Length: 295
Ligand code: NAP
Image (cartoon, rainbow, N blue to C red; front, top):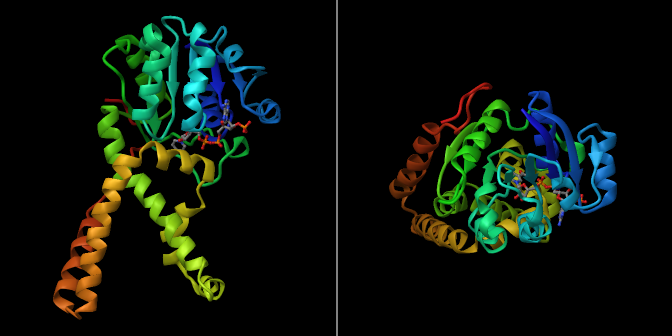
C-alpha cells in the first residue's frame, strides 16, 4: 500500500494507471500534474486524481510512487524537473513505448538517484488519447515490460512487479535494447506502415471514392493509423535505428512478393501467402487472463 501516487502526464496512460491503482486499493491518494492546467483540472473533475499539482516537482513531493506518462520526448525534461525529490525508496516508473532513449535520459539526469527508476512499458493502449479515455481496466490482462538497469533497486523492481500484477498485468523483464528491437518489429514498424499506407490510399485522386468502398478487412488493417500523431512521431524518431532495420527487412520481403507477382509465378506466390497464413493462424497474442500473476 502506498500513501500517495504522483502522476506526471494526466493522459490516457497516466489516468488509467491512477484509476487502476485506486480500484485495486493500492494508494490512499493521487496527485497529478499535466502540461496544460486544464488537463489536470479535468483529471480532478473526473475523480481520476484527488489533487492538482502546479508542477511536476510538486507532484513528486510527498509521493512514494510516481508515474511519468508523458510523450517520450518530454521524459528527459521531466527527470530534470523532479530529480531533487527522487528520494531512495520512492518507486519512479515511466510508461514510454521506447526504452533505450528513456534509460539513456535517466542515466544522464538522475545519476546517483537512478536506483529508484524502474522503466516500464505496458503493452496496452487505445487509438484515442487523453484523460477522457482513461480506463481502470486498460492494463487488465495485458503484458508490462520492465527494463531495469544494473543499478535499479531490487526491492523497487519487486514493488513495480507487484503493482502491475495487482492491476491485472503480466510482468516480463527485458533489456532496453532487446525491448526496442522487438517492439520495432511488432509495434513501431506496423504503425509506420499503417500511416504510410493510409496516406497512399487517401492521397490518390480517387482516394475518397476508394475509401468509401472499403470493408472490414481494410478497417482492421488500418485501425492503428488513427494513433496519436505526437506520440507516434516521438516513438518513430526515438527508435529509428531498429525501425529502419525492420523497414529494410520488410522492403526485401515486399520486393520478393512483387517479383513473383510480376513474373506470374503462382506456386511461389502461394507459398509466400501460405507461410504467412499458417504462421498467423498459429500466433496468439501475449495476453493473460485477468488476475494473471507476475514472473
Ligand atoms: P496522452 O493521452 O496524450 O497523454 C499524455 C499526457 O502528457 C497529456 O496529458 C499531456 O498533457 C502530458 N504532457 C505532455 N508533455 C508534458 C510535459 N512536458 N510535462 C507534463 N505533462 C506533459 O498520451 P498517452 O497515450 O497517455 O501516452 C503517454 C505515454 O505512454 C507515451 O510515452 C507513450 O509512448 C506511452 N504509451 C502509450 C500507449 C498508447 O497506446 N497510447 C501505449 C503504450 C505506451 P496536456 O494534456 O496538458 O497536453
